Length: 290
Image (cartoon, rainbow, N blue to C red; front, top):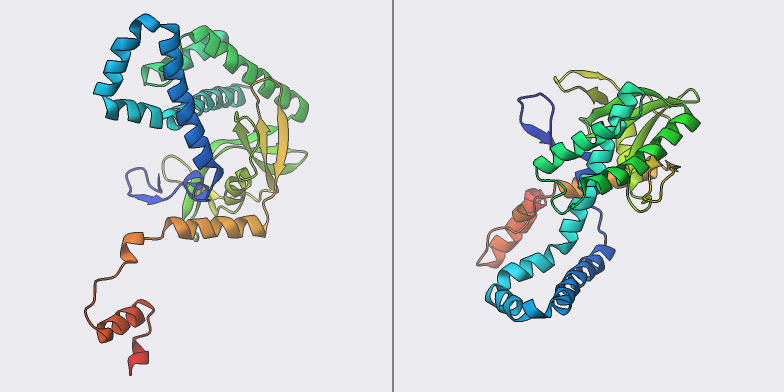
């Protein structure tokens, strides 16, 4: 949720929250797969440490709910780990954009350490290995900057649309080849098509929103694209569809987000007249009873 004024109420859902309303049936299978993988890892631990098997089995049986939660949380733990890594890479790319210089190894380590102290990367045993993985992404980002020569017009800029009712933050607004574009950095395994829903929301924003609540005119953006920084290194630039069709889908998801399901089940009735009255009232059709 976003505030429009620094001390104001939470007013609008974020772009990522709205776009996340889209049903993703494949996630159910993935959640189950991750839970199964976690359970197998626990069995493999027992296989590698047979002398601890009896005590571990007693612990698991004695704390069934704790074990069940641990297995069920496998998918969310994985997602949080990936999100933490993406946050670290984004922060360092932002430093790169502002300073127009590659962050040093010390700066990478300092950012990573600060996040660890805040609870991120709890399962990362090696800070050096983490910094190595980050460096691969930063090298890819440096290659993008060299090859595309973007002019960074706005960095980590919040945008807002009062008419539809949402706000969000774009990683950067850049000028490339004379056109203004919204760019987002992704460290995911692949570029997902639903990123277009985030981009189209940025492009159709009505104003830029600064941290102090100041609203500035929204520039006319020609489109949106992804700067993909994969694990193997390098980069790819992927343009996104941001037309009327994509915006219509986003608006539909915004309506779905605002749906109050508890209000849709009306009070119980005990006779036909009450039933009809309740239904017609709900449809704003009271006049039909006359």
